[in-house]
Length: 473
Image (cartoon, rainbow, N blue to C red):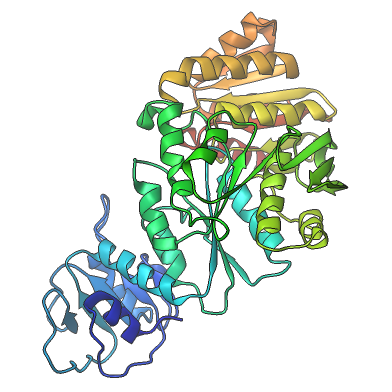
């Protein structure tokens, strides 16, 4: 683990009196501070971490990064200017390191620590499927390597540096999801993480409201492959089936491995069959070899995630056996939770977020299952110019799959209108404004054998529907 001495050297370029005290963990939430941790005081929109420095110390933190003046009595080593010629004597812990900018200091320390680690980093970005890809790649690589992954949504300018600081020197691989919110962000993250393998999932319409278009999203995501080292050390794993991803092969000096459902790809799959809640089966091809597989991950669309994980395994030196065993024993699920109710109905809770692409995939899974099919579909946010068309496509597919549609929110009514135009009877469509209303409709209408898909953007908090239903199971 990184030491207090390492941190001061990273920030000041100066070695201080020997101090081998280890930093056990880096945190930005004082409630998560443990003995020996580093607390980074960030000034956020809703709260200022500087107000919680002493709370972090009370919970055991040894060190805090701050950019504001601290109250009297709090020990501080000021790094904003040059340190004196003689090596300063460190204050007794706990103490603060005062810097110009706490976030920039966190990132600087992370760059320093990354350079010290003998680590292969696999970077992942794309519009849909980043997190499930991260989870599955980590499971596959763990068949051979001591592997770490960034937790939860630690995929931005704060989360990625925290992930790196929490890495011990014993890890061999880091699987790092990278988010895209503005041009240059992924380039910046790559400057910290130094990935050798870059995996692109797809280019969808999510965040188009902010980015402007799929072309702009593709340009931002391509920063990952542009940052990779040249072949043979760098490898870009690209989705051959995605027309926005395939051309990224011309934007990197790294080796390129294409995956997809097209036999022209280097790694591809066919004979794909959904097995409902038992997962999927398919045949996977790579380098003139093929193997039939059964993987306990739901939905035919998950074969793309499986191919990405297999590709990451192959390019990092895993054998066919290690890759297939990692996939077959996977505990990863694509954020979808299946819950059987006491009434005999099945709830598919896929409410983490929603895009047209992921909602269509969820409807495909619903189609595979037996029983009366009910879809509770809500607004899909941040689609920009693709908003109307995206909701219409979902409504069209819903009309082909479900016997009853419950549309939630103002944009949900576009889904309902489209489903009605494509043949779903008006009596089979219910429009509501809130999660509570949707739960009420379900509560009084669910029967044994019904299968219910719940899907919508996180901003609608449609996860409350499943929670409200759970209270009445």
